[in-house]
Amino acid sequence: MKKIKIIKPDDFHIHLRQDELLNLTVPHCSESFARALIMPNTIPPIASVETLRQYRDEIAAKDKSFTPLMTFKLLKSLKKEDVLAMKEAGALAGKFYPAGSTTNSADGIKRWIEIKDLLKVMSDSGLILSIHGEDPSVFSLDREKAFIPQIEEISQEFPDLKIVFEHISSKEGVEAVENGSANLAGTITVQHLLMTLDNMIGGTLDPHSFCKPVLKSPVDRDSIQRVVLEGNSRFFFGSDSAPHLIQKKENSSGCAGCYTSPVALPLLVEFFEEHKKLDLLENFVSRFGAEFYGLPVNDDTITLEKTSWIIPDEFSGVKTLYSGRELKWKIK
Ligand code: DOR
Ligand code: ZN
Image 1 (cartoon, rainbow, N blue to C red):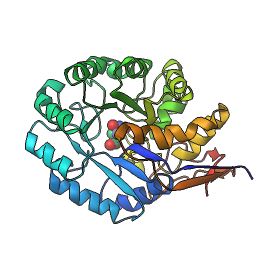
Image 2: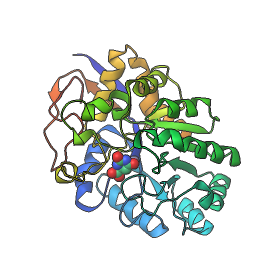
Image 3: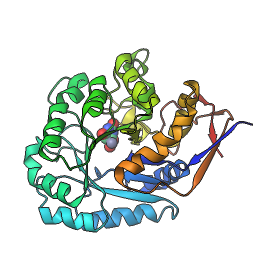
Image 4: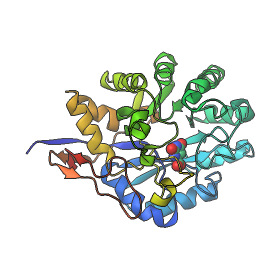
């Protein structure tokens, strides 16, 4: 049987949620990923040393072999000392959510200038800035494009600040990273790599592929595929796996977020294999992100076998992307 063995990957963008849901999300994540960058849009947000430590301990207690890499949410109310204290407590990155851009972001930032002092401290202390790059005041398909000037302004103001343009979904987003400074990188999710808006609304409505930023056109998806298949080291994997209970997705006011942790790695192997670029998989999932974040690559390895399996209809009340579909690769 055909097998593939690679350095155990990292997921540089994940929503693990809280309480009971951690019993589902942490084992699913740690099966494929040795480490993951944990998003802070919980309720209350991760925005203090206490909440950061408590959340990290709660996650770590679910699986001793898994390393949560912590972030905090940038809030207008934060002080420079708070940022430094969270760095001291182990935070790797601060997350900038434009106000109203996505799940639990009402307390976000209107424009980057509001947090200029905090960005200065982050730049000086070597914290990474992680950005949900969408301007929610414009038409939904144009939100990423409309946010790019803010990324360029931040990058010019703070040339030493490392910035991650998260979950790139558009051709313009791809090009902003390609043409930006060496301190700008982008994460890519499986849904934006593989799907277009037609997967969500081209036939019947699929609420389980609804996420922010929303899926876009074939031109946008092809542009994302291009940089991944070119092996561009400025683009690396961040799933944005974001579970919501089925009743919150299949709802007249459905929540944004695709749950992908259990299926992401098999889908990626399939993608690279189909494009005859399996040799580039390990860089995308296990090296480029670690290098950008200044971390060593993981010691562990993971093996996948070419065995077909069907994605279960649900996992404890949560549906993944592509539930019911056959996958070609399985984690051993
Ligand atoms: O679709 C999304 N869901 N995008 C985000 O940025 C946040 C996430 C969530 O937390 O549900
Ligand atoms: Zn996210």
